[in-house]
Image 1 (tube, rainbow, N blue to C red):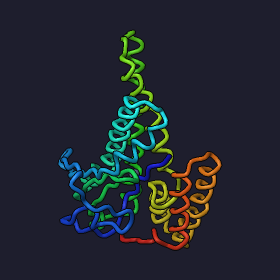
Image 2: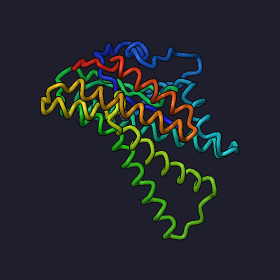
Image 3: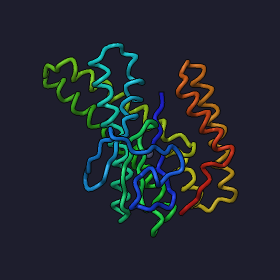
Amino acid sequence: MLFLSPFFDDKLDHTARPEKRTRMFSFAPTPFDLYFVLFGIPVRVNPMFWLMAAALGWSSGDIPSTVIWVWCVFFSVLIHELGHALTAEWFGWRSSILLYFGGGLAFSERYVNNTPGRSVFMSLMGPMAQFILLGLVIAVSMGLSLAEVELHPYVRTAIGYLIIINIFWPVLNLLPILPLDGGRILQGTLDVFRIRNRTTIVRGFSVILGAAVAAWCFSMGQPFGTIMFGLIAWQNASGAFDSRAY
Ligand SMILES: [Zn+2]
């Protein structure tokens, strides 16, 4: 299972809808899209987001658990993207969020006054937001357990899901593979130190690790992860993620 949360750094036209601002994984608006604004940041949720989250959680076999799982995925991915988007806003760059079949995307106008250090920080803040959420969930559940509060089984299910998602997801996203956050962090770090051949290094990491993760997913019987990481490795090999807009 896999959701991607890459932070795209293309030169963006912020007046356009998110799907016009990315070349990869574009997803056109539908009548079933959910729009809302959170902390001043526009968020659009494509219906495929719910379907993919439900498909990933279906293994539990019962509908209440799947519904709880989907809401936990939604909340966690939203927190992740808010980590990126609020950092961008803090740097003075308008941002927006799209949740789609591959997870979440945060868009921003970060080509203005950007530095490699800021890019690294912004890429880091998505996974960090999830680790903070993880810490809060663990602290609250430990507090409730110490106070011997009797929790509804659904609440216990939600706590369990939130812990799993907020460990697995940020760790996955920190792998040094473009276009994951870890790939962006590696790219930005090599930029900070002006390492020679840095484009080749990042691409090499992405191809080799992407193929390795795809092989691992295959051995674990995870077709979605196999296809996704296989595609990522292939796209890196062909230079699809080589845009260096900043
Ligand atoms: Zn991210």
